[in-house]
Amino acid sequence: MTWDDHPIGEDDIQAYIDDRLSPDRRRQVEDWLQQYPERRGNVEVDRRHRDTLRSTLLAGDELVPARLRVAEVRRQIRAARWHRVRAAAAAVMLVIAGAAVGWLGRGWLGLEAADMADAAAAYRVFTADAVQPVEMRASDRARLGEWLSGRVGRLLEIPDLSSLGLRFMGGRLLSTADGAAALLMYDNDRGARLVFYVRPVSEGRPSGLHERTEDGIATRYWFDGRYGYAIAGPAASPLLRPAAEAFQRAYTAT
Amino acid sequence: MPFDLRSRDDAIERHVPALRRFARSLERDKDRADDLVQECLVRALSAWPTLRSLDRLRSWLFSILYNAFLMQVRHSKREAAMLPLESVDPPAQASDHASVLGASDVLHAIGCLSEEHQAVLLLVSVEDMSYAETAETLGIPIGTVMSRLSRAREQLRNLLGGQNIVPLRRTK
Image (cartoon, rainbow over all chains, first blue to last red; front, top):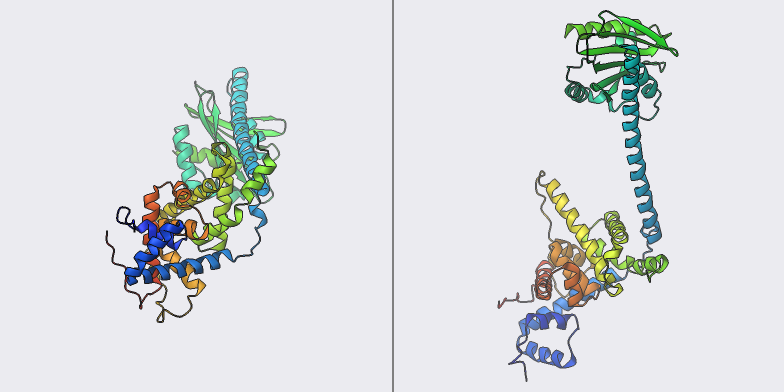
C-alpha cells in the first residue's frame, strides 16, 4: 500500500465514479472504499445517477433543426449586417434631406428676403414620404411637443384641427442656417396633407400675413420677431386658409 | 487561412448535437435552448479568429454557450428582481430507494442545482470532457472543477433521496 504518502482524496473518488483512474490507483481506491461502507454506498448511488443522466441525455435521436445549420447561421449574420448597413444609410439620407431643406431655405431666403420657402420645400420632401413622413408620431404627442419646443426654443402649440377634418400625424426636427426648425404634419381621410413649419429668423421681417404659390404648393406665412411660421399645402386646398387661421390664433395667443 | 469555410462549418457543426444537449440541460425550455445554441453559433462565427487551435474547438464552443447562458441568467435575474420569488419545487423524495430512478427525476434534480454545479456535472458526466478541458471551458481551476463535481453529486443524492444511505460526512 502506498496511499499513505499519497492519500486518497475527493478527486480520486470523483475520478473513480467517472472511471478515469489508472488500474493501480483504481485498486487503491477500491481497497479504501472497502473500509468505509458509507462512502462506498454514496459512490454507488453517484454512479447510478451518472448512468441515468447519460442514458437520458445521450439517447436523443433528434435531428438538428435547420436554423442551427452553420450555413444558415452565417446567412442570418449576413442579413443582420446588411440590415444595419441599410439602417445607417437611411439615417444618413435623413440628415442629408434635413440639410438640403435647410440649405434650400437659406438659398431662397438670400435671394428673396423672407418668404419662408423652406416650408414649401419641407412640404414637398416630407409629405411625399411613404415610409416615415414624421420622425415622431402623434401617439407620443406630449413628448414630441416637449422635444421640439426644447430644440426650437419656443413653446410649440399643436392645435386641434379636427373641426377641419384634419388629424395630427406627428412631427420632425429640421435644420436651418438660423437654428432648429420644427415641422408638424396633418392629414385628412382623403389623404390630403398639410404642414405647419416654424423656424427661427435672424432679422426684422414684414408684419402681417403673406401668401405665395409655387409649383402648385401654397404657403401662408407670418412672423413675430424671432420666429417665422408657415402653413404649406396644395394650392387648391380649401383647408389651407382655415388651418392657417387656427395656427395664427394659437401662436399669437402665446 | 489553412482552413476553408466549408470545413470550418463542418467542424463546428459536428458539435451542434452536444451543444444542444448541454443547452437543453441548462435551459428547461427546448426553444430557448435552441436560441441559446443559435446565439452561441453566431458568436462563434464572428469570433472565429480568436480560436487559438482547432484542438480547442469543443471547449471554446462550450465556453461561448455557457457564457451566453450566464449573461441571460444575469439579465433575467435583474428582470425577475421586481417579481415575487417563486419557490423551486424539489423533486418528490423517492420513498423506496431501490425503485428505478426515473429519467425525469434526474433531470428535475439537475435543474435544482446551481448553474455552476450543473455545468461541471454535465460536461464531465455526459460530454465526457476531461477535468482539464472542463476547467478550461468554464474558466476555473481544476481543483474547483473537482470540488464542484463532488458537491453536485452530493446535492443530487440529497435531492433524489437516499434514505438507506447515510449522508456523507464532509471531512474538510
